[in-house]
Structure formats: C-alpha cells, structure tokens
Length: 125
Image (tube, rainbow, N blue to C red; front, side, top):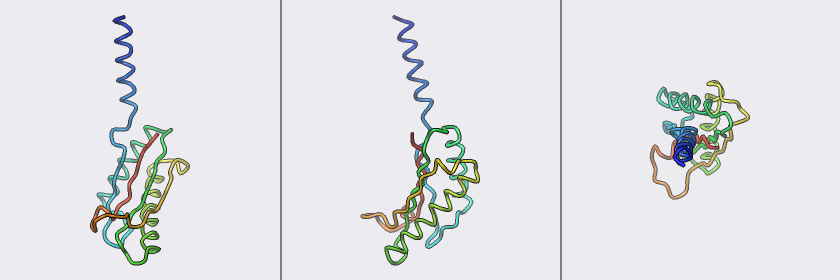
C-alpha cells in the first residue's frame, strides 16, 4: 500500500512537471505599431523556448489593438501584430504548423491603454 501511495505521488508530480510554467505570454506594443521592441522580443524568445519543450502543444497567437480608427483598421493592426510575433516565434524555432493566429481588433468593454495594444501567446495542450 505504501508503494502504491509513493507511486501515485510521483505520478502526480511528474504530471505537474509536464505543464508549462507560464501558459500565457503577453507582448505589448506602442501606439499604432506592430514593431517589437527589445522587451517584446525577449518575451517571444522565452515563449519560444517553452514551446520547444512541449512540441505537442499548440501555440495560439492572438493580436489586439487600441482604437486605431475604423474597426477594419483595428483588426488589420492586431493582425499585423500577431503576424510579427508568429514570425519571430518561427525564427526562434517554433514550427509554423503549431502556430494558430487570430486578430481580434479592439476587445469589447476594455479600457484604453497598453493592455489593448498586445499580442497574447498561449501555449496550450
């Protein structure tokens, strides 16, 4: 019985170790820009390293924007941001077939500011 308890405990610990330490990596952008700054490049590089440790996981890249103009312009900017992040993930070794991109534009019911000018990298099983 004691061996069974120890075995189950070790199994539970190994399952925890298989989960990425952080699942969502936010990358922030300047107003009206899809250019990554050094801090953003560091976040993408970190996410790419984690993604490479979990090759069966999907890498979801979702772009958002502040109100840049029309809703179409907002979606276009959020798409450009998602494309920039996905491109850097691929340069850092993440297979393109694992990356799922989406562009939201301006999130509903959100306050203006940097949190709307972002891309989220979600590494998920």
